[in-house]
Image (cartoon, one colour):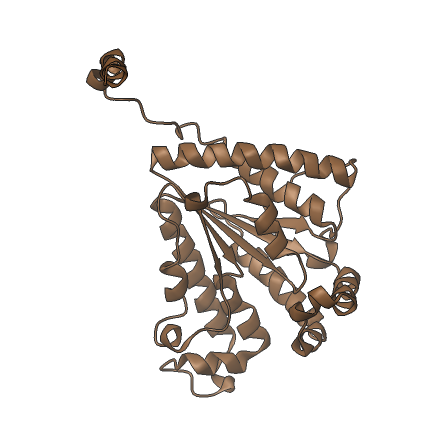
Length: 287
């Protein structure tokens, strides 16, 4: 598998949206089935070990394939071992707290995977493209869009980095995936939604309004990765023009990186209990 990790400053226009894995669609899907089964078994061990949680963050433009990736990558997990949160427009309750609150309360417990479908990065992405959204947070020092200057965003990035560092220091392993879709492929997928009646419900006229802001979103994503891809919480650029390739890339990265944590093992039975296993079996068989 190629190295998709962001380890230095990048220009988003130079990051690939396609990748040649030298395999057919069927071969990619077969490899994914094998990889996700191994991931599912690893999660069972992670649960028994009980010291780490795993947070998977997915970001990408509309139609990048986040929903289907979650479905296909985590299909072989114990249902109790993975929790998915899809963050949309903040609710009235959520707006009464700081912008990280709703993400904090959705974090996975030790032993579990948490998947954020759109993440806390929306707070330096959508709000940056549409700064008027910040006014809905009712911040003490923000009275108009003019108050939202570069120092505001600098502070918010510092807060996000501190948030993630705190999580990692307390046992959460963070993986951040940017599903990098080309503008041409997005156009194809939007047209497909319109052409297929069973897909129409996914389309919103607002998708076209946001598409007009493509370049601005790309600049924001570039800034996000350059400011927040840290050794303790790296970003991965996942070429997303091919859904099968993107799914396999994410699953493979998760498996390979988690296998590096050699301390993730099933706990040993208490020595006294272990010594009496035969006795316990005999008791059950003699019932």
